[in-house]
Length: 162
Image 1: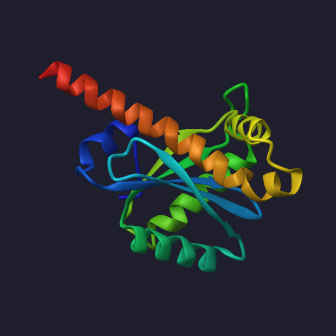
Image 2: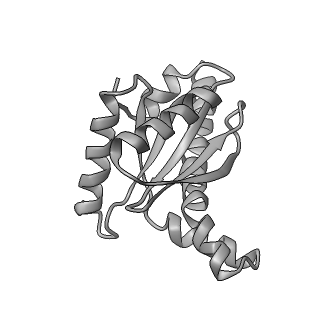
């Protein structure tokens, strides 16, 4: 079960299952996690990238420890909506992860998530050095929060349809 749409994920999730957000960078993987009610995204420590096999082990150990039901991974589309090399790298990462886990992945358009994360950290008066450490997990939080908000609106629409 490699990738799902957000709508498919909404149907597959059980109550009380947490999901994780990922911001895949070349040097780090930003990480965020939802609460069990899937209302809030909380940044977690970044994963320093080494090589795929090791990165996957660390990510899957986190998923097992936290009982993660799905990953929301930022898809770094260009501002004009086109897909560049980073989109290809992200899709390749997910294809490789699909060989190692049954945990589903959902691609989420992450345009401006890093900009929003940087702005939020600036507003909190976080120093430049600390911002550099936290930006990827803050971006993962923005990605995850967007997906959580969408899941919430899908749940509200399905209750309305009943």
